[in-house]
Length: 96
Image (cartoon, rainbow, N blue to C red):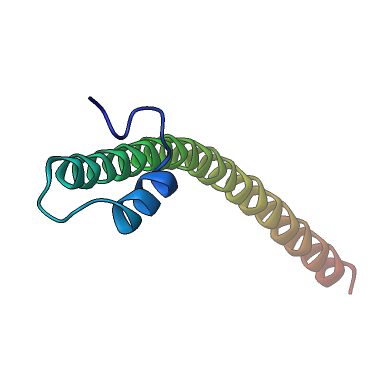
């Protein structure tokens, strides 16, 4: 006979505290059920965390790649600006 089937962790804990006799078969079954259900919750949480970490890693890779190309574009723009400044300076010196 199962004393924990269909019961939530909270219900099992209430029964464990209220009615079960320590070291009885019922008490041991309730303790085992609490342990199993908590372990299942932890396992589910870890799987969810692993999934979220994988998504975050993918997103981070995308952002890193975009930042790299943004830096390349900004470097080219800076070089074009510097070259334009040099050309203007040379033309100004030649005009004097």
